[in-house]
Image (cartoon, rainbow, N blue to C red; front, side, top):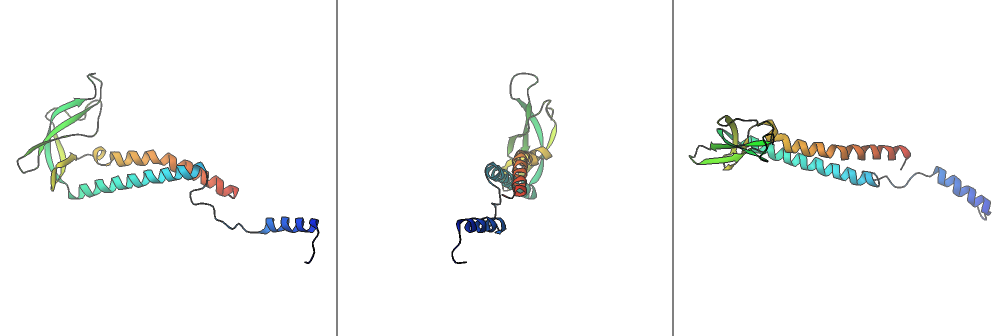
Length: 166
């Protein structure tokens, strides 16, 4: 192929561009908004996993005590406002402690004077929570559910980009 005419060079360039293989792989998280939405979704997933692991480790070492609802706190003075229980408990060392349930409900979940299962850390009896599914897993599940739309939108964007061959 010594001297090629302009027409021949154009032809060879066109054939080479159609038959050459792509040299770079597309990014793992896609391009554009899919990349950032995917990263945000993965961040939510990592945070949810860390919170769930923390909760599981606490439950593995926690000791149970029976507490009593000593008062109900309301978010506002309205009768229909969400409320939570303030629970008194003792960790077996004779020291009276209180904790406020993390979950707010309308109507209140507990009545005054009702017994409540409390889980506390024997190394730090002041670190306690009500032993219920919502108290244990509510925050990790909420963070996970908040991150799922990000992952879904990123997955659809990535799938569409792969179909287009980007």
